[in-house]
Length: 339
Ligand code: KG4
Image 1: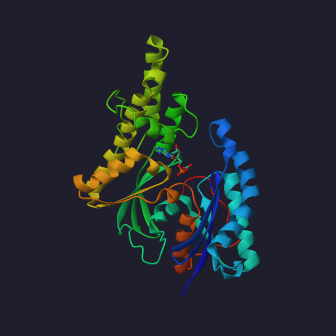
Image 2: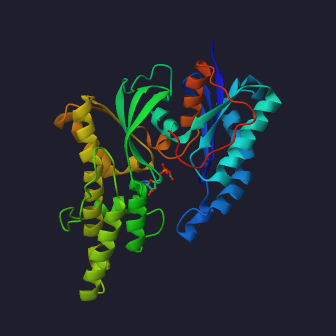
Image 3: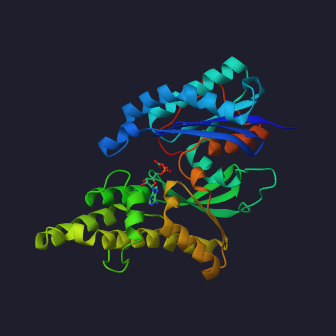
C-alpha cells in the first residue's frame, strides 16, 4: 500500500514543501528569502512575513510537481520546532488548516530529527545507500552542533552538543569579523581553498566528553586580528585566504576530535553528517578520510537535503505515519531545542 505525505518546513528563512510516496521523494520545492541579505542575518519579522507570502504557492507547486491530487494526500507533516517562532507559526498554522480541511492526520516533526532522517530519502525505489542503526550523526548547522546516537528512525540520543555557539555560527561570526557578507560559511570555505591552513594557529577549547564550544574561537580570532591590524592595517586583505584556511582547519578539527572520540568509545563505525555546515568541503573531506583512517563507513546527504528543506520533514513524517504518531489541532510550535 502506498502512503502520500506532504511535508512543510518553515523554521527559519526557507519556505519549503515536499511530497513523498512512502519513502520515495516525488517533489521538493524551496523558496529562499533574499530579503535578509542586506541585514547580515535573518530578521525574524521579515522571515515570517515572507513565509506568509510563499507558503501557498510553494505547496501548490510541490503538489503539482509530484503529479498527485490534493485529495490523494494521506497526512501532512510539519516542522514544529526548534526555530523562529513567527516562522514556525506560519508552517504550523498552514499544516493544521490543510489537515482539517482534508480530514487527514497531522504529524509534528522535530527539525533536528528531520536533518538526520534526510539520510533515508530515496530518489527511486532501488536507492539503498543509508547508514545502519545504530549510527553516529554529526549534526552541524547555523543553530546546532551535536553528536547524535541514532538508534532507530524515531529513537535518537544527543550524546554531545555545543554549550554556546553552533559551528555554523562560528563560521558566520568569524566571517563577519573579516568583513565578509552573511552567511559567511560558504565564503570562508571558498577562500580557504586558496589559503594555507597552517599559516595561523587559533586556540581549541577544552570541553568535557563529546560537547563543543565555539565562542572562544570567535574571541581568539577577534583579538588576533586586532593585534595584527595595529601593525598592518591591510592585514586582513593581504591574508584573507590564509586566515580562512586556518580558521576552517580549526573548526573542523574541533568537530572531528569529538566525533572520533565518540566513535572509538561506542565502537560505532557508521558515521553520518547532517545540517547546513555539511556543505563545507573541508569537513566532507575529513569525514571521508575517516573511511581509511578509522575504517568508518560514511554518509553525506546530497546538498539539497542538507540545508533546510521539506523533503527531510516528509520522510520523517512517513516513519511517524507508520507508527500512527499523530497530533491534534491543539499542537503549538516550540522555538527552543527539544530532543
Ligand atoms: O542547516 P542550515 O541551512 O540552517 C540553519 O541552521 O540556519 O545551516 C546554515 C549554516 C550557516 O551558518 C552557513 O554559514 C553554514 O550553514 N554553511 C557553511 C557552508 N554552507 C553553509 N558553513 C561552512 N562551509 C560551507 N560550505
